[in-house]
Length: 173
Image 1 (tube, helix red, strand yellow):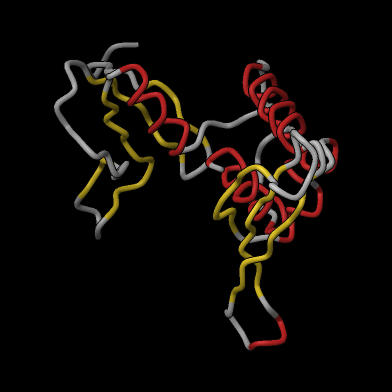
Image 2: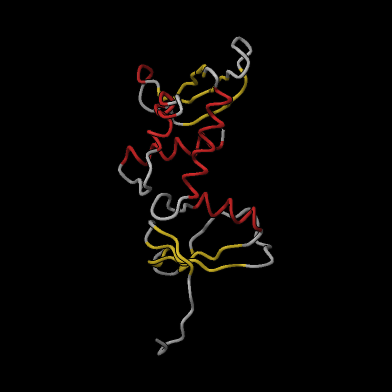
């Protein structure tokens, strides 16, 4: 469910023209026989289909209902034949895509949060431009905790790119 919501969020960015990655999340869904999911806003549940064959699944997809007025959403139950295998292949392809060097995947705040929890290392994210009326240089990453044994410093380049931050005293080249 988390992986599908990540992909649907990426599809939304792709549709809005704010997608920076070198792969197409819509294409990824289509490639794995799940292209119809791109019409949804989010996935509420994924589970086996008791009325289908073994390996089939049902995905509860939140979609906007155009007949009920603006902003109204409904849950749509989608049967995915051989869904367990399709979703496993989708997840494997996504992992391979993330592992590719170059401009294939730009790190996101979601990626940072996952790394922070997995590695037990906090991140101090310095921003390119001061926030809160020019008073703050650190971005809020919505950590659930702040008791990490170590922290690393990163630089957030205007909502596009993360880089390791370095300290260089004035006058050094």
